[in-house]
Length: 354
Ligand code: NCD
Ligand code: ZN
Image 1 (spheres, helix red, strand yellow):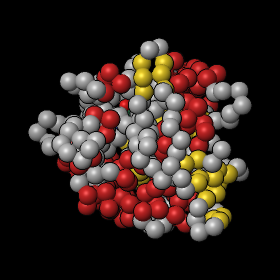
Image 2: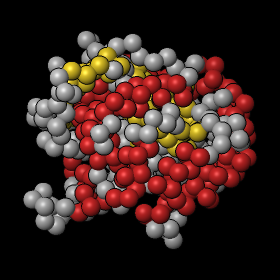
Image 3: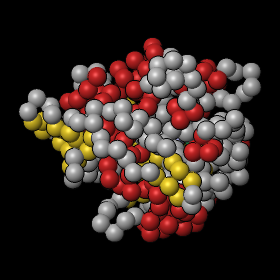
């Protein structure tokens, strides 16, 4: 990392996004260039409307992504499979053989967007998890229980005790990424747990607590669906724990934006869907959070080293430069008449250098 003139600019090894929703078709074509601008690679989530459950589907999706990358840009999609109770150990063999599948994603049924096909009971997946453990294919986890009797804000904490701890006891050598952690409970678990476990942290969970969902733009009351994602934003003490983890220098915590675009009409609705679209300003948002914590010197390892190390991939060779200045207004991002509203546009002190 090199810094100049009292941290007015910050040049770091090019980062990767270890948790990204690219969608498909015209939406993907509209949002992908924003990720490619900041990130060399991304772990691409498999929760398309029809989930990506087989290697064949993942490779076809990968080909569509490669096709959508603008000519002058470079970007490497790292593909994942969606775990269901019908997944087979042989599919894990094929995944390992392909060399292009970097993880299998566990969505508890109904926990989040497009998770209807998710897992009802982890016991149904024992043979697959066993094969993943043996072939060292990472399990990527959406860590929430979705039982109606569990408070939405407690879903992550319950998941640790009810699902993750028993699962890791049964498969102690399985490499696990607890995705988008949001609570001090998850931070403490990941920090202290034995074995090979890491967690991604989003920029929005580092910058905002749950109050952000209920603030009008002028500081009065309001409800802001663009701040609604799952796991939902938590109270300030949790945000501070996440910031502490991200800036701690522990290699178990690394960058994953969870950028999740939804059409404006589906966000600004009587039943808003979950997901924050952060790709256009994600890296500046992380810089903002690390800057506020006085830890800009820790950003590079969090954004560019620890994820690659955990996934067993080489670190990137290129660099990106961030500048301490408000980002230029973003263009309107549209596809097929839908608009995608990025989070935090206009509220950031950092931007990407040209
Ligand atoms: C994601 C999406 O929209 O696909 N939504 C979200 O709130 N994060 C799904 C997910 O990662 O949970
Ligand atoms: Zn996600």
